Length: 448
Image (cartoon, rainbow, N blue to C red):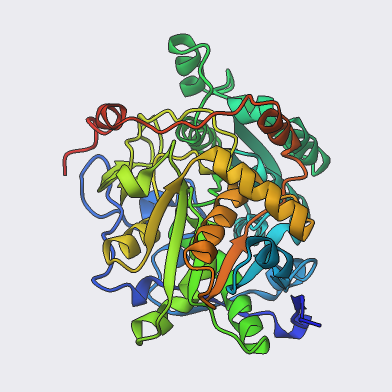
């Protein structure tokens, strides 16, 4: 009988995070101060981030210790299992071996909790009382609500309006952990009120919600801001996924030919693939495939340029693939992938042709998610369906190719069943963002 689950003992959980930044060929461009257009140091960012995280954001160390207090919380669900998708392989009729790293075992049901716990800890360590944040599909908001409760912090979540309406039980989860949640744009901030005046029927966006959360943090002395993706320190915290997966693949006596992940801001994909990057740079034949929605195609159709991370232009300028900070994505059900920009780390690796980005439509992703649920028994989140679709594409290119595929199952879909209802009733449709709309969204990029 084939081994289904490859497990690690708690004592085998990594005790250091891997920082990929020193290993990126040709390096990365620094964040810029939007006022001076000069590289931004930690002093100005300290208004919204604790110094412990800013040190990680700009670190040139390859390995950073995971504090014991963080490890203790991570042990609630980590190490996460690596699972062989034998039944999916059989249904596809492929000779490929498909493994998935199951991050749905976390308290919030997704990989987001890996960074939420770390961010809550570093804020608590520096005396912060309250965190503000945004959330798209609700996975990050759920994760930070759990983590802030663990470390005794208050939490305010600005949830993108379309997801606030689509995913009521995410709100229930956040309330259970003691967080306060409002739909974004909201009347709670000056920027939210401005958007509501000009676009009262807007579905919202992560860019708008980030602006609100940043304004919240900047106007209160007891509050810092927490971001669930994109930034370097988030990618660092998520490296625990790939570090565990490397140990588990070794236990299985196997090694991936291709690693697949869904891409929104870049955290879960970078989390599983960056620990394998040094192998590729040393000559190992391994491919990294990032899968994004055709309706929000930052990597495949966006511009590689400096841009703001939010609509109100409050963030530093980040060098990344972007659709423009004015981009308002359509209300697809993979809410965690509806972001205009991509992690500077992932963007730099795409620039170096080390990551292969592809875009897929939501209907084919839901079809893949349904097949996965019927074969492997776990209902995936709409975001995760994109990774599953990418893995299926790889496994069926040549059914006789015995390649090994590893993908990140970033979260379960038990709180996304309303999205599946809409899929089954025919209310979901494919949407490919037209070139002219992308040109319009990117015309206001900062001139650097």
